[in-house]
Figure 1: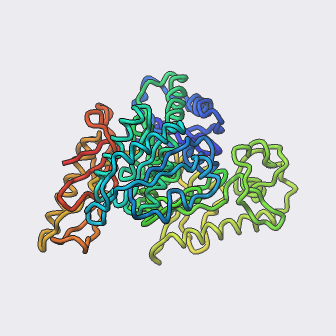
Figure 2 (figure 1 turned 45 degrees about the vertical axis):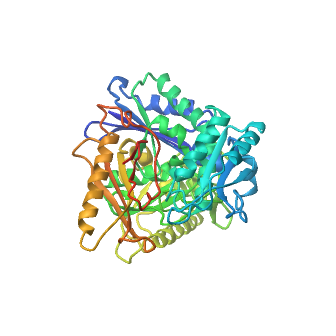
Figure 3 (figure 1 turned 135 degrees about the vertical axis):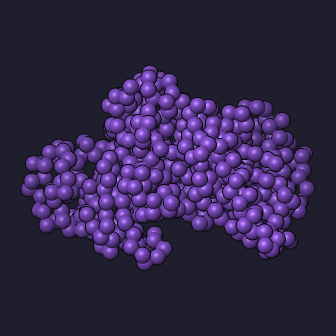
Length: 544
């Protein structure tokens, strides 16, 4: 049996799946400030036979929430390699003031970096980096983010800088490297690296809390965290790369929606207590954002699902004119909503008054004007339909799957989208999505592609991605390619093309994924010289 857990801002959901991937039981518990007690309560309500549990998969929004709130972030030294270029726009130049202050705003500009084709921009200066390390030590900083111009093309400068900084600062320093986290654009990649460095201490505390919660209910099975792309990472990887979990909540919900509805291609509307997330499933996996994404007003460019969020949820406040959100009572829904004896009019109260849901005590909203409730719900439906319409890329009919506890707000049909489905266990789709998460392998490489050799090169890349997934812990025979991307590089000779192939398969619990070669992830393209960088989503990277 496997347990999936999703720790949201309002509720902690848990689901128990059997060998045949059937949902055996599910439970909800309010999320708590200490994390541990909320997970423990959900697990006890689940009442799983602990001796039969072989793995626990956990998704969390804690890291994203910490960034949004500007709280629990470690001070960071942002070291950029790029002088004499890039000095006009220093690190964190476009950050909101709250988040910049939370990480300290410490930045250092040094020589180094590469041109777009891998040629040195300026020589790395070891003495300059040693002086930088001395200042970092004097300020008592232990988290460092190193970014270099075009490091996804040539990572050597970042790695050399990390070696020099570690030698000066000691093994107690945490160093995040930008080529492991983001794509080509410098500022967005650097932002992602600084965020990751700021979350390292919190990641250690969160992972320990998860382990403690499982121990309290006598579960000794290994546990994994779900990533932005719907695959798994082990706890060591999670401590080093917490930014990889940012979008795990919406991703888990979308994967769970695909599993529960049996639809591989559809729109998913995930309504929680505070927000509604709308995304598109293609082949059973969330469609990725094509370019930059934004987190707490900060531009980043690591892989993240293409999701639009609305400030509409079950706990959203309803104004006198029927307008709903974005303010919400959140996890206090069971205390403040009218149907639970509170004094705040929420979207859930309207759903109960309109006869759409049976939650709390319906008699407490018996006096509400039903026409007002229907107007408020109709406005919610209209806004959700507009968001789904913005997300789709064709005029073909598109089924909509509604999941999440707040999806009681979604009617049986949306304007322009008559096919709306709410599958069984819809309210814990996020926990189900975590439980079914798989192991991935990825090849992201610049291939020479002479005329007439395209199919051969793509076949080679597919085979390599499948092998990487199996090597990382996927069960042989279950791996399939779910994404293939080709980007011709006109500025390089020999028909050079960047090829990215992603393969996923079921977790093989008979062995420890990635244990033999667990190092770091890689997301950027390798140099055109023939170096191959292939990353696995449980934390293994291979350099050929």
